[in-house]
Image 1 (cartoon, rainbow, N blue to C red):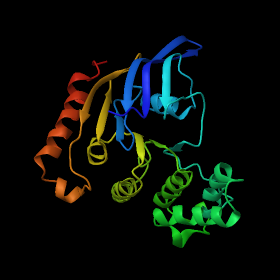
Image 2: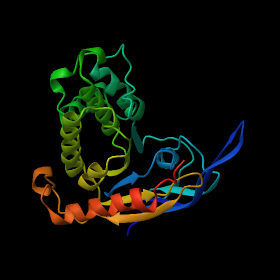
Image 3: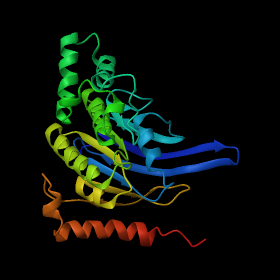
Image 4: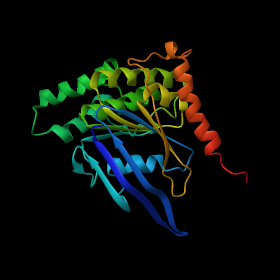
Length: 263
């Protein structure tokens, strides 16, 4: 496998008032270019910590992280992040929120007309051309998340990092955006790392599902390779035996091997 993102012997601890908390221990993971990888596990298992380490928002206590042949030593435009909270600036329109990121990355390299075209193309990709000049308080939660995805994609990141991007949405909106993400990733061939609690979401979207052990000192417990053909259709997969086998494998890990002891 072509190693595009690589974590080698990565550990992370936090110093707290109660002493040192070991969040992650000895995490080893290689991600190929164009691969969609989901991180799943119980709350507190370090999923978001792994994502923030790849994003450069946290620094590893031990071990090393590589992206596209270069050490990860801080945030960078080659790694776009979509958070569960859309994090839009309320005084800016949808266009303004995306344009701000585009300008930051491409200013001096492209004309204002090119920056404008890039912003409009990103909004069109997520189906929001009609909301270009609306403010966040004028659109739905699902649309806000789409703006966040558009903003990340407009930067043309080498890796798209998503921290439970649909976790706060209702079931129908979540399903629609999952389908949109499948379409976008199919068009852009993006490398994606996504944190999720949703087993069905992980199986539907992923090439591999990385299952984390319980913390503290969480690590990778197992990895499920999802060999379902793309493009994927949720209705066609509803009665697919292979889909259900992957789903069962993840559930068995989460609710049997990683079952928390009774209080």
